[in-house]
Each structure stands twice: as C-alpha cells, then as structure tokens.
Image 1: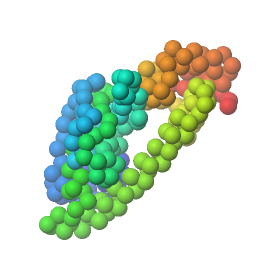
Image 2: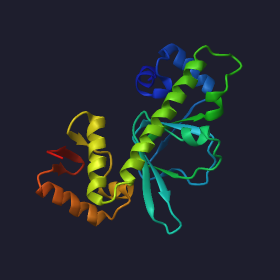
Image 3: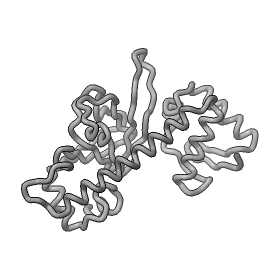
Image 4: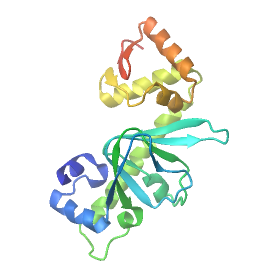
Length: 219
C-alpha cells in the first residue's frame, strides 16, 4: 500500500515506504468509502481536509443560482482535491464533490500538512515541497480548462478538449474519463448538440469513437 502511494500520489513522491508509514500515522489520515453518485462534499461545507482518491474517481461540480450544473474537474485515482481551497484559506467549499464511481478517499487535515509536528519529522519538508508542486500543477490544469472554455464554438471546445486528452495519453488513441452527460457539463454545452457535433466530426473523418474511446484521425 505504502509503495503504491509513494509511486503514484504526488503528495508522497520521494518519501520512502518506511517513512511514509510513520508519516500517515503522524498526519492522522482517515480512509472513507463512497458509493457511486454519493455526495462526498457539499458546497458550503467546511474545507479543512485534503482528499486523495485511493480508488475510483470523483467529479468537482458547480451549480449556478438557476440550478445549471457544470463539471469543473474530474479527479482520478491517486489525485488530490481540496488542496487549493485549503491553501487559499477558503473556509467554505465553493463546489460539490460527487463520487463518479465507487470510491475510497484518504482524508488529511491540511494544517497537519503545512505545520511541522512536535516530532519534527525529517520528511515533513519534502511533504510541503510536494504540496507546492501539486498546487502548481493544479494551476496549470485550471488554465487548460479556461483555455477550453474560452473557445467561441462547440467544435473548437471539443477539439481543444480531445487534443488535451490525447496529449495526456501521449497518443491519438485514448479513453476520456467522462461520459456524454458529464462531458456536456464539463464543456457547459447542451448534450444533444454535443452528440450531433461528435457525429459530424466523425462523418468528416476527423475522429472515430465508441463510447469513451476516441481516436483522432486528423485535425
């Protein structure tokens, strides 16, 4: 378990498995399981913990005053959520976190990450460094989302999103983490219009797809 965390969770990178075992005890982590579609965190809940997805995936969801839903982010296995809000001193969550599938979350009190414990663990400085790097990566990801949102039409938004996924997969043949309804909410577009545009792009020979499996032929 510790070796998987050290290899895959950015917060624990370069911390040896033996040290990580001590650290997890020092941090007082708690693991909790959630069923698919269950609420992990509601908007306006207190933000004093960072969540690490050990199994499954979660969606970061925002709703406007009219009840329109948009998906701000998809957090997959071994990724974190809540760290940006906690670091910024935001006391109430501006988003709702929903389990995209059956998931297990490791909860860590943010103050225990940034404050050295009474034992002055030698690896705590590395933990803080990793948190800063994770925040920088999250900022880059948000810039990518803003770039997609800034596109003027649906075709451009779809193309930007699919190219982003291809870049992450390092292949033009890839699987996206969102279903059609979730993708529409992520792009903040009508689902029917999204499906029509995808079919048009396939007819034009730009892409091939089967459910969440996509292949970019040309762009």
